[in-house]
Image (tube, rainbow, N blue to C red):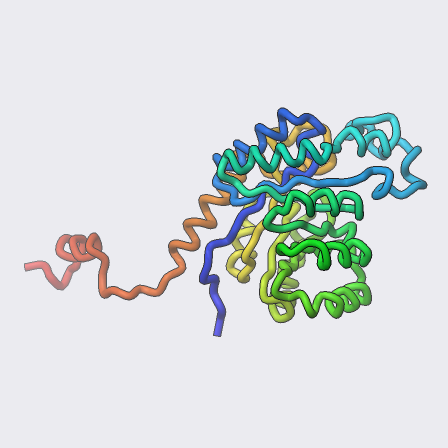
Length: 287
């Protein structure tokens, strides 16, 4: 028997680096995401010297238009907020009535975000096989851990799933394809059905155009949908083109809420309006 969704789908507005390192833009993104009825806004925390491979640190960004520094290390440093700024972002989220979270890319960043004690911490696809980071999170942090499953081989996935077995009650496992944007034919959405047989809680991190695919993911019982979010898709940054602007995010939350309301069995014979219309329209009742 088909298992249809029985709960609302939470929506995470992934701010990622679309703020371009501008704290005022980040604050505006928080209030905008709230106005779009997102449940969370998620930022990213990296220690660039720790998370950027040494062979990349002195190289220029491969695409100058998207670069915020003369080297890739400078680029990453320009996009970072300090722990103090993340603490302020969390407070601004609380003031706006939206939950804060962050992904962490390295041990230093994980320790800094653990100090803020958000409702969940995200492990990005880039770190889903970085076991020192996973060990730290599962031992020193007691909230939920969301983990994206992009850029991973079948062998690595098998090893990861075995590692995660004791923590299933704390995990949301996300199907994700690490392309920005990802073409529809490479989304492979049916992988969600495999994840749902392994993990009690699954999510979808989408990098595609539009919002139609998210509705399909919801019908496949994802509990959380995470979409990259921006105030302007034409701004520099490699994630901008695969992000939803405010209008798109608002439509996504609107449609997901509508779908949740509609997914009910009919427990009455007719609605009140239907009864009225029956008197006007039903042919067999005409005199």
